[in-house]
Length: 345
Ligand code: 5GP
Ligand code: MN
Image (tube, rainbow, N blue to C red):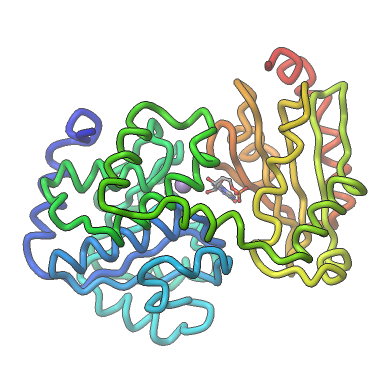
C-alpha cells in the first residue's frame, strides 16, 4: 500500500515538501466527471483542507446529479458557469492537482486557461500513457481507480491522520464506481484492502450505493429499456454489440446528464460478447464509450480510430461527423479486428 516502489522518492519528497506550508490549491479533473473523478477531487480537497491548506475543486463542466450528495459538492466551481472566477482562482493558486486524467486535452473548454497557470502542477492518475504536462507525475495503471491511488498517496505521505469519514466516503465512491462495484478486472487485492480500510471510518456503504445506483428517474429506466429493446445491435460474428442514441430519443425521454451512465456495459452481459460500444449525440460531437472483456484493448482501438483513449477494458472517444456515419465507420473497421475479437474470451 506504499507508493515508494512505484513513484520516485524524489517526487514524493518534493510534493511532501510543498505540502509542508499552507498553499492555495486548485484541484481539477476531466470533462464530464464520473464517480472516480468527483470522488477523488472531493476526497483530495477535504484531505488538503484538513491539513490546513485552502483547496478548491474546479470542474470543466457539470456532472451527474447522482454525485451531488458527495461531501464538499456545494463548494465545487464549474468552469463553464464561472469562467472569470475560475481564471482568477487559477491565477492566484500556489499549487494545482490534476486528478483522474493525464492529458490536458481532457480539460476541453478549460484547457486554454488552465495552461496559463504559473504554478507547480501535480498529476495523480491511473490511465496509461500520460503526457508530461505536470511538474510531478504520480501515475500508476496498476490500481483500480484514482481514488485507490490517492489513499496510497496519503499513506505514503504518512498523513493518514487527515483522512476522516468524509474523505473516506469520497474515496469509497471513486473506487466503487470505477470498479463497477468491485467487479471489473482492475480490482486487485489492494483495492479490497483499501475499501476495507475506508469502511473503518464509519461510512455507510449501503447509503453510498443507494445514492449512486438507486437514484434513477422512471424516465431513465424507460430509456434504458428502449435502448436494450429497440437500439441494441448484436454482431455475433465480431462478438460485438452496440447501442446508439439520437438527440430526438434523448428529448423524448427527458434525458438529463448522467442518465446514460452504464448503458455501454449492458451488452457485455450477453454471453459471447467481448466488445461493447455506445454512441450518443451531443451538441457538437458524437460521444463514444467502449468496453471490453479480456485482452481486447479498447484504449488502443479508441486512440487509433476515434480520437480517444482510456484503459485496456474501458475507453472513450469522439467524432465530429453524423451519428449514422460514425456507426458506419465503426462497422467498417470491425473486420480488421475479427481475429482479435474471436480469440478473446
Ligand atoms: P467513458 O466511456 O466512461 O466516458 O470513459 C471510459 C474511460 O475512458 C475513462 O477512464 C475515461 O477517463 C477514458 N476516456 C473517455 N473519453 C476519453 C477521451 O476522449 N480521451 C481519453 N484519452 N480518454 C477518455
Ligand atoms: Mn478513474
